[in-house]
Image 1 (cartoon, rainbow, N blue to C red):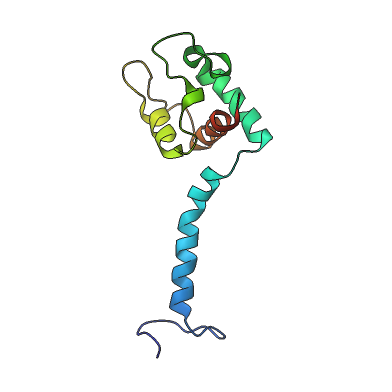
Image 2 (image 1 turned 120 degrees about the vertical axis):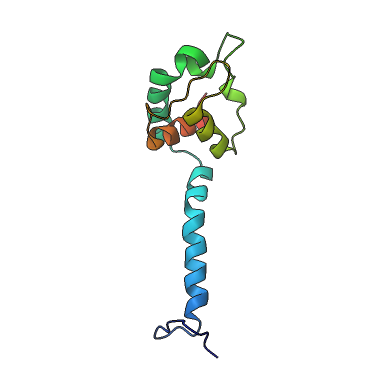
Length: 118
């Protein structure tokens, strides 16, 4: 029995089920991309962005001698969303919001460096 308002495609007995599965997979792709191990090229590109935006406070190779900046070597490697939010919105008391100065692509590369860097 076919569901009401459901388009039937030739060769598919349950088109709505396939459509729903495709939508779920598409929604999961960004999360899967964030959890995939970064490539060496992404890490290198992220290192360049890190040197421009982050090294002043977080130190060369993420080694900070200060007490205010977070030690990025200890950042949870499975929390891309927290990292993105911290970069975009800043963290009190010392980290500024970078929302208007850095792109989402650059944040993804920074995340690659933090996850796979030194």
